[in-house]
Length: 270
Ligand code: 6AU
View (cartoon, rainbow, N blue to C red):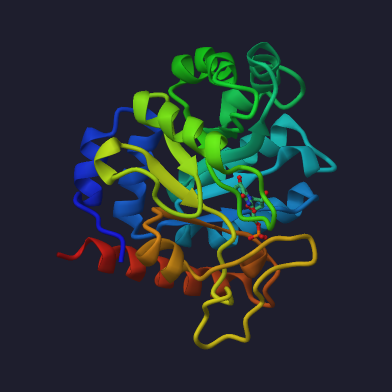
């Protein structure tokens, strides 16, 4: 089992990034380390699902470029739901260009991601300049950056030197790079970096009970919250279709929250 040395409260108190600190406080207060991936294309559907699952999650993850009827009113509404329920927002934009283009994509265009998203993520395949492109708005607005250090999809090339660069940048500057997207912890909890893992489902490949749905037809691969959190040491599990595609999304959210929180608590108990 992965070893944690700090409590959530200790991690929150020393977290050098404002969005990261708020997230750790929410996780501890609401007893949930579940991030819901709201991968739906209709804004009304996203908002109604967000309202239903809000009590059970710490983070709403969006892909605004798949929303057919995107508007700033949609963002305002999602923000209101998030504030009412003590949830933060993570736009899963996966910036990957040169720094200057990433800067414009983050701050401008019709989405204006930096204005409303507490967290966003970036690939480091183009080198560390992408972080410098995102830095200005992130520091001005107190946002947190998450770097992709590993991916959940089969055949991923986010490995080796790409993983190493993401880990090195996060370890060097946790005040800006508040987290890593990875299958498990790549740094000790004293590094002040929050790990978030996608590719999680109660029907993951190691599920003892569910008939394993170990992936989808596009190369996605799933493990259970328990494996991601207890065995691999991740902090936050990102769950999409196992909740939003369930017959009863609220029941599925509760089940994933409970499993993920129990796994977290067991991995801090000494
Ligand atoms: O639970 P799912 O498979 O329905 O959705 C997983 C979500 C999707 C992906 O775009 C995202 O997680 N994701 C990411 C992220 C969060 O950056 C990285 C990755 O390696 N795999 C992955 O699935 O919205």
